[in-house]
Length: 207
Ligand code: S3P
Image 1 (cartoon, rainbow, N blue to C red):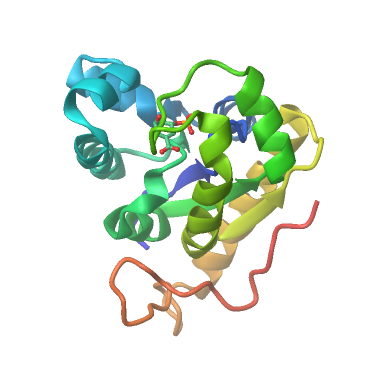
Image 2 (cartoon, helix red, strand yellow; image 1 turned 60 degrees about the vertical axis):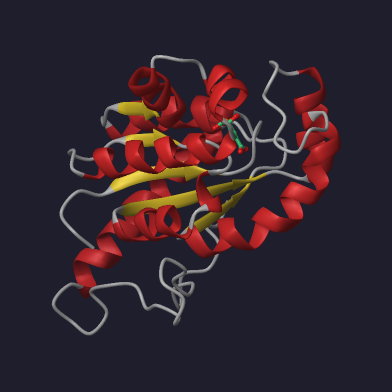
């Protein structure tokens, strides 16, 4: 891992990445960045407009570019978009450039939040709540591959999740510092680029 260690919050739409990220940034005294806002700023369009006018593939390219640019910056707490793990290159960056913490929320709870939440662009042509099941099945393994820690959110409030995310970040940064110069200074990789294997001995963050 290189110098800057961002705390990346990853997880499905509606998982609470922005609220938890803001609170975690206050705890860690790091700047907060919402990657969707960085994409919107660069494109001078809202995420919804990018999807409607340029399509999802172009959104993913812009998202990867924003993530790459951020990687040259000092550490931030970053709320990522729910589909950041779709690209192998982004999964690689999440593993290499910081600590990714997966906010894991049950499908039932996500569907409840998506049903009443702000309007999000459809990714499959179906309503966000209707497409959630299939997307979650596909993305579950991708979140797992990118994450160094998993927070099972249950009904915990953002402040509590921020406390747990910050603790996982501190613990994993300290573990990496301890192991630097020894055998495992970089995460182990499977043969597929950008799809590193989960680290040994770093199970889910304990509540
Ligand atoms: C997306 C999630 C959105 C945004 C875009 C695509 C996705 O971010 O990046 O609409 O593919 O799940 P949030 O997770 O913040 O809603």
